[in-house]
Image (cartoon, rainbow, N blue to C red; front, side, top):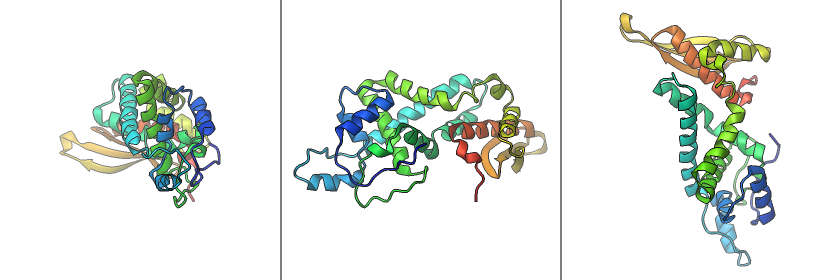
Amino acid sequence: MTDTKPTPFRYPDLAAEQALADRLGVHFADPYQLRLALTHRSVLHEWTQDGNIDAIIQNNERLEFLGDAVLGLVTADRLYRSLVDAPEGELTRSRVALVRAETLVAWAYSLGVPEALYLGTGESVTDSPRDRILAGSMEAIIGAIYIDQGEATAASFINSWLDTITPDMESDDAIANPKGRLQEVVQERKLEQPVYEIVAEEGPEHARVFTIEAIVNGARLGTGIGRSKREAQQIAAREALLAIAADASVLETKE
């Protein structure tokens, strides 16, 4: 991740947009779609007040809406095919872990998206990797790719990213024994062993349902619900592996 952050207010920059397209690995038939994906609502007033600029008059929110749906579908399809024994609830939690804002922001930084964004002068932007603006911009970029290049290219773009963060989750060890794999991961990082905390225990004695959280280095990284403690722990461990794969910074010691 670079230290670059979005710079409030800038004029449309075709060269910067093309450089970003190159980093994305996408040749836009209509470059307008990428510019639209990079345009935050905060910049529109300043652009339209400048009579010397041929600026677009829309923001990226509609593309963000579309990209969010495309990202969710592609991720859900991948998890459905790779985690063949996972129940619906686990698949849902795994998808949420992969496409949460923090993960999208890390992706945006890795592609140099911040330096290409168009923001208004008064827009408050921090160095936080959890900046919602960046997460929204990644969803908008996905939407732009989908509109301009179609479903297959958008899916390929998303999967190329998922390839970098999910191999651990799709390995035989992780699928068969996520709790054991999580233990290996923390050992590799010289951290204390995961703690599995029972946070809820419900139902009659003959049909108990356990809710267990996996805690790694003080962070609650996964939640599992199962009819046995072991089942709930395995599910919690798998979610923790997803969280770590998506954003390794979750293992950093919190001040």
